[in-house]
Length: 406
Ligand SMILES: Cc1ncc(COP(=O)(O)O)c(C=O)c1O
Image (cartoon, rainbow, N blue to C red; front, side, top):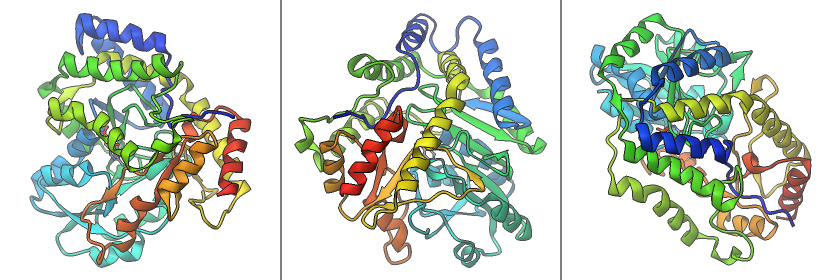
């Protein structure tokens, strides 16, 4: 039986070790830091086609930086965004001095509809903030026309969507700007990091004004992140992120494992609270790692796409709500999310077949099941299929067999 973990680290253990030792010696800056950051900016400009690229230590600070000028110009203005979201996103809207206005979404993608957004508009609405969840772009042609027609600024949360595009234009470039996350589980990773892209010169000027105010990420925090990435690769094999449960421990799967997962991710944050937004430069070790990943991310995404297409073509299966992909949008296969009625049973079933999977970690921002019924339901049904951990057609076919058998 194949044993496919829920995640892989697409960086070589040797590179992580090298950057860990540099982080210990030099912290987040050090020799050549400015050159290494500049080299990453150039590479990202080439990869996305964006006119302007800015680096930060996380994606959420990128969203804050994009929204802050709007908050200064129009304090309290309303920003429409999906209720189904990552918790930090509405928080950044608030910290930018703006008011989040939530809309319900459609299953299985968790995206708003034009009708829902139209109903949410008021004279105080100034912006729309879309999220390209799990690497699948929203219909950006329709949304950019909608934003133009309603005089709204369009912002994109591209945290999951490095490599995704519509009509050949990379996500993040359809409105005033987009923010990518370079954290460990994302499409492009530097272990930690955020990237803001914009084609808008005014937005770029406000981002550039931030630069002189940025400090460095504390060495301890950087070292902890690098260690956790390295721990995964060393303990569980090169390029493999710790999968807490593997056969024969399948019986552990369920709520207990998710609690453990959460404790592992949140404990460091609890013991060393990090203030968000994080006004710091992207640590130089992370810039070097992200640049290294950029050299093969296109092939990684192509493989994920091909395997995802293979899985989708083998379906549909009535009991597994798998999101389809449109042909005119270039999605990444970062995380293919299945929506099932019994996610714990489903995960146990996958694990018994050698595939570890994670639960959806997006949530309803409000928990208001009356106003946002789909948004409240989706996360409870969501299981990420471990697409990024599949290596070849054989491992994809085993997953197809497991889906068929559910
Ligand atoms: C949808 C979404 N948006 C934004 C973010 C924020 O990214 P970061 O953790 O780099 O701040 C995440 C992180 O997981 C996310 O999933």
